[in-house]
Length: 231
Length: 219
Image 1 (tube, each protein chain N blue to C red):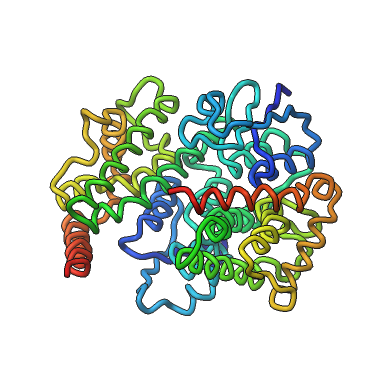
Image 2: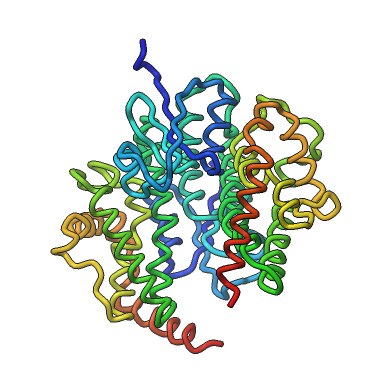
């Protein structure tokens, strides 16, 4: 039937939050219709489906809308039981995954923009904070990958991997725009091998935004921010 | 089912979230007041954020109040605090995320002054408006007929916001402007477990006034 299990995703090409949801849908093999939103001219559908935040992503399943990427990921996991589980079964392990996903999102992702939008001392300070948090993450995930990481299979990609990829998947783009190593194999070897292993998986690699397009976008953002702060 | 310990601080709203959840499910636990903020035990249990509350179950620490609440729900599923239907659960989680993102504004208003405080007060009002308009329509509690995890997450609005308003000298939650929220607060505080486990308002005023003075005068 046409309406049965119909999934629609309202998104934007450059939103890491949207990429999380797309990757989850693709990992689980869930067919969906993608609708690109013009964020400068939001559709009435988006405003109706997410009146609180008016943001993407919005997942619409059988006509019922859901917003907030973390919420959508857990919903996908609970609704489509075939395909790889995004969260482990054990409640303590689930708590650990949720904790680190929240850490990557709140402590790292939300402080990254400052790194791009500043230079000189301000940028150094922001970078120092990011590197400190990356060290904490490096230490923290040793419990999740006790034997280190060589290969990750498609069916073992979960919620934390998805959040990590959405933020740091394009790390080579960031390095090109900033002119420095963000994920250094010497400083954070576990994070580096984690990302490398994830990017070997075709569906994960394909979820990244196009390299040149993102470089151009970030360079523009940086130039724009630096121009507006200079006298 | 294993030993349960809760490390908290009086009168932290985040401690109370865990206390309410454990009591609503009838889970016996040992409460440990974290007397000197940043005790070495706390640093061991929560090395990343160095904050309470921390739940220790069978020797394993779980941090971050909302993550603790989901853990409690999974280990002790009786008297459920989340809906069983996946879509309704997702809607509840949406409001949990909203509480996580927006409630800090009221605390920023409490801790700051001048422009920063004005912005925080504005943000708090916006948060209240969103809840009033979208969160409580046609419902006695956020959880429906019984209180749930979202009610617990918004508990700080029921008791702590009033204290902040008095200290800061600004009334945000007027009953005429926020009739649904106003009614919800009344209903929430009448639930026996909540009524019996609310920090005394006058004692809170003393503690928070003193703390605010310290925060505003420190460099």
